[in-house]
Image (cartoon, rainbow, N blue to C red; front, top):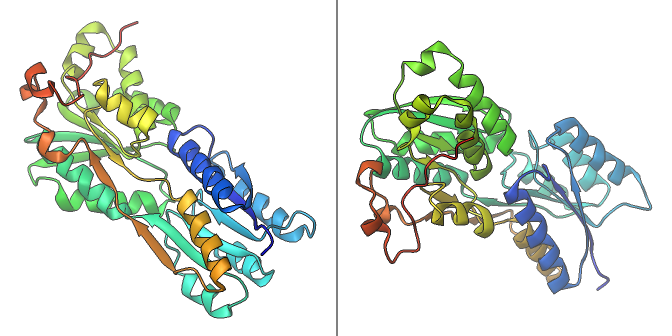
Length: 318
């Protein structure tokens, strides 16, 4: 079998999970002997569509398959064009409704590899319950056009304690967007009336951006936030997990990279002369385990001793 020529289309370079996606795809391609190109949409759904359409229409650059993590929707028309041209279509971290229709055409493989996004949210709700007894929690969601955001929020609301009220702001998965969203929220008079008990972000980068937003507050106002836990998701080893170990985040949710798995699933199916499974789902994991989390006021150096975790770090000052 000739080496497959694959393209992985990702959302942005400015995100540690997307970097992990690229690394996992490159590593998997090297293991299975596939050729691989990674492209980025710069958080622009229109740009991503244009990038992929150009690949489909170019007979010289046309790949064997495209593995895409959509910026927004599942791009059904682009998917149909790819499959009609005999190009495999793999979707990362989404489960498009049109997959069954695409697979019936039998012109090219169509499948998805995704983390259980609703379970990510359920884990965040359980982390919240372990860290906070009651009161207001600020949630930083991703873009409104993302099904990942919808599912994570649905899961969180299903497991959060009823005595906790969730207030939400939006970012675009980058650290800067988290910083700007929280900075804008802090400028509202209503935000000053709330005693926020935790900041729960739908990824680690936005959670760290939220921490940075607090640096513009007066020293007195920063003291109000000193004991507030921040949590995120993605849990990349060198970023999210490291930030938890250093006490910059209280918890994260490890969402394993799906791009490498998608490369392996596609290549294995090609070798077997079979169709890839329509859906491959990967389970997320709480880091640290929820049983090790306690409310912020009860977190002590004694609790963290021997676990590799530290008491929450103070906010950086100017």
